[in-house]
Length: 227
Image 1: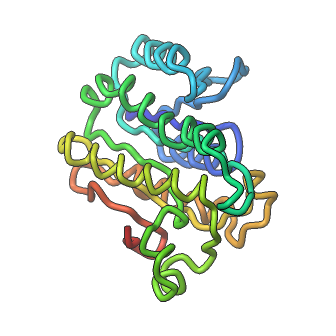
Image 2: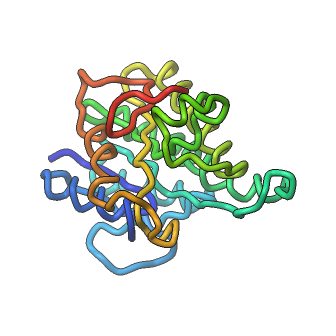
């Protein structure tokens, strides 16, 4: 049976992704901050090196490999105009949204290398598209719900580059970034235009692509997004 780990998986898109992968026959490890009861729940705080290493060791002891990693854990950061955002604001957001996936990939890479047609999905956002930020026409075509968000948007742009770099460095692992769209979850006060099920579609689709799927890409439900 193929195995998967989803970070930030106790609610919203992470929980729906974990549920769908389990429904598809995967053994799913649910990454959660702090100690939580539940089958295959892995205590995992992506901002803590010790926590990430301990999670990787736990999965190694249980299965010895990992076939799918979904880096879903993320935070929005402050909703302030760009001129009011501080370096500390960015550091806090980047610690989860950028450094977190790097910590997790580094710790789980040996398990992914032992996996069957291994796949990594980094949950990004259309707000990370530099093309959409710079070009109103690109926004209208590809990211109609775009808003200015210096901390969050730039963190997702960084995550997109990290995705492309990992895809280049590890051609035997499929690395892709996905944009679930503006999904109604607690992350945004349930203000999104898409349901959780709709938002999770692209995550699950890229998580289950197999060895012949794309790598180094950036996708929404409608297709590739402009970087």
